[in-house]
Length: 536
Image 1: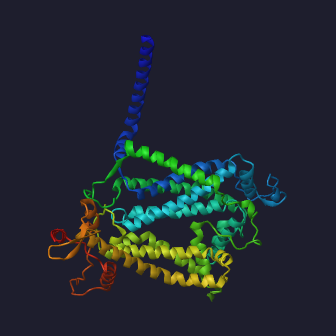
Image 2: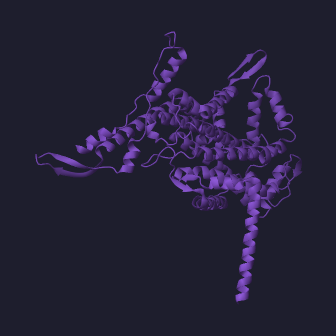
Image 3: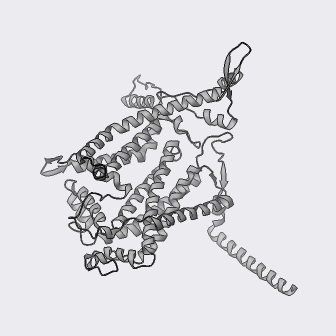
């Protein structure tokens, strides 16, 4: 017995020595130990909203895993074949090899339909979680210095995710994907001079081209995933360098992050959360079908009808095209300028550019050059919150425009009436959302100030010695008080003349924007005011 124990001990010691030597060898040549040690001490905040970024990362991992499976069976070819698979209603129909292989994956490959559902739902979750993550960053002001570049990287990831989704959505070569590509072809050709050349280059000839599926396939499995991985890596590097911004609270400072280190606590939690995300995607994919290409058949422009909407993340582009008045064209310099196509592109492009550079615009307006590691409560930045609400509303109306035909058919309304109502909302709804959101934020600020000074109403009435009836208020604790009064507002920029005694127009413009950004602000109570209220 003792001999056996001695042998096991010797074996374990030998294995430990080998592992130690291997680790030392690797660390001497790569210095990976320094990276692991530094990264392992990184503290992650424990607020639930930070999980949105993790959902995006984990859903992308699911996309890679399921996409690898689908790649083994998909044929990225537009060669015409006759379908002879197990799906009887499509037997004998001529279609592309891409469509036929999609049918085979759905009905012949074991687990193929489930993997298609997993891949599609994970892609939808990937785009949605990036969008929600960016909204959280915007409304809490996490994009401010020194994280402006990380905002731009996150926005580029959002654009790449939409492009990745659209290229994958277009691969089956069914009616829906063909109509989406036809819209892209129309957009390209609407540009004077270069439009037809751009379309010819992209499709490899007149639409639909000879091998557009192969070109999209290359983008979908090689170029775009590589760019996504690159920008995800850059995003994580900036997160480590700048550290997480965090919500205000008692005891929290600009550099004191409250949360858990990566090793061992956060790594274990993150691993468990990955399997939760994976499990939810598998559960949805098992019970909710999506993208049933067999219900529409191979691409043919003739059967287009109501209900041929793109995936939701591309809906805003389709909706914007529908909301522009038709027949809006002019003849200039021998070319036809299709404003009903160019104007939507200009509006959508301008909207996306404004979102991408917003951190720099706000920094210019406010003149705030400080580093920010403490997040804002949305109510404490009412103008920014109102701008975000207006932008979300504008996007939502464009998005709703993509379903104008479904609204008309389901609610038995005229198509023109739905379009006109959405055109009205596209202009008016963002203005209403801006004003209503700003009023609500200012009202919440006033409520917070009242609570900080007087506490919460308890509903308990007492009678004083002089006969006066008063309500007893419950004071707030230290943490909540800090949360209510710790925000720091900045005054509008002051106009100062230059050496010649003049104020340039650019400074007047900047000061005007600054006054607008800070108008109707509620100054938090000072410590002296709080102490006076407590004594009272």
